[in-house]
Image (cartoon, rainbow, N blue to C red; front, side, top):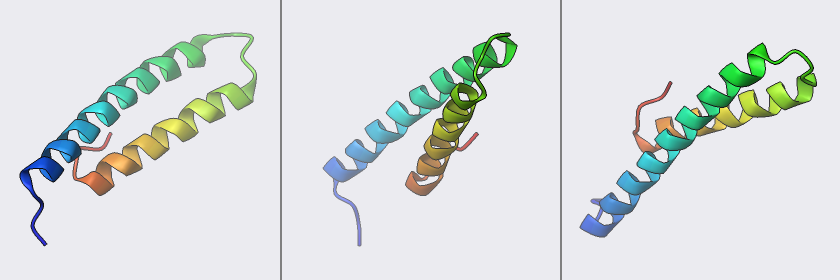
Length: 65
């Protein structure tokens, strides 16, 4: 089934938003990894969120990272 022009635009917007979220999460992971007094669950939560964003990008046909 072919996607309409509007569906393609929504998909592109979703991919762009997910790419931005991935970039922000990667920056957060760098920050959290150098922080000394960090509870391990905070780092785990950020890593888990990053993984989910990457999986969503793969499923939508965006790049993964």
